[in-house]
Every structure is written in C-alpha cells, then in structure tokens.
Image 1 (tube, rainbow, N blue to C red):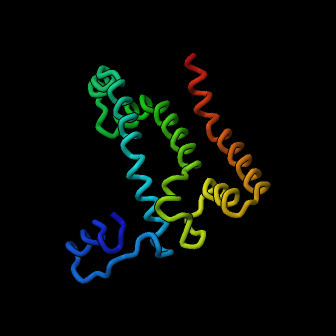
Image 2: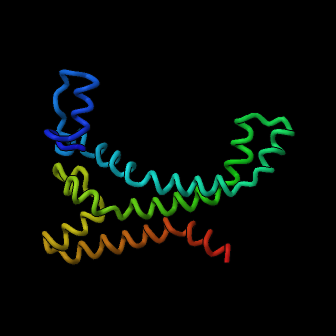
Length: 166
C-alpha cells in the first residue's frame, strides 16, 4: 500500500487530487513515522474493537432502559452507563495494547528497519541491532532488561485486574 510506485495510497491520492507527486512514504523523514503509526493502528484496531463490542454486549439492557426512564439523554447514558460498564475492559485493552506496542518489532523491522537513519527506531529494534549487527551484547542486554522492567510496570494494572477476579 505504501510502495511509492505501485502502492494503493499514491494511486488513491492521484485519483482524488490529480497532479500530486508520488510520496515516498517510508523513506521520507517526515512521513516514515506517521506511516508506521497508521499501519500499526490498522493492524491493532480490529482486536480492540472486538473487545469493546464484547463489553458493550455484556452491559445489561435494563441499565439503559432505567436511564431512559430517569430522563437521561444519549450523552448521559454514554457517560453513566456505557463508560462505567466498559471501564474494566478499557483498562485491560489499554494495558495489553501498551505492552504489545512497547515490544513492537516485526512491523518496524519489515517496513523501515528503523530508518531513515534511526528515525523510526524502537527499543526492540535497538536491542536487535545492538546484539546481532553491532555485537554490543552488554548494551543490548541492558536495554532489554530496562524494557522488561518498564513492561512489568506497564502490565501491573492488567495483572491487578486479572488477579482480582480469581
């Protein structure tokens, strides 16, 4: 999709606005990181939406009916019925997504390899390159241990939520 010659993004832009130049999405320093973000959102969006849909289906219909009887409008029903009903699921989805995004490796390595330069470098690709390309085992190990500690802190809310149910 992001290929500058045969990609569908440039073809779509040419259809919508003829005369625009073809963009080099993953090589342009201004576009590389936003392109990775769009691809990552595209990849992760369905799972989070399925989780939220399951949470929405678990909220009892009676809560909405009671809110309507009490005179609550659409915004009040959303703020006082839907959000509290999804609070735990939103926290779980957020914690899981933060952990998954923190260790994002394959997408960055395949799309940009951390480039142009080190503009799209993330910690997991830094560990990989330090260890396997530059043979700086100590540095790679230190960064990996730091990543593990940060991931433990980020996953603490999820661990607490899951542990509370048992």
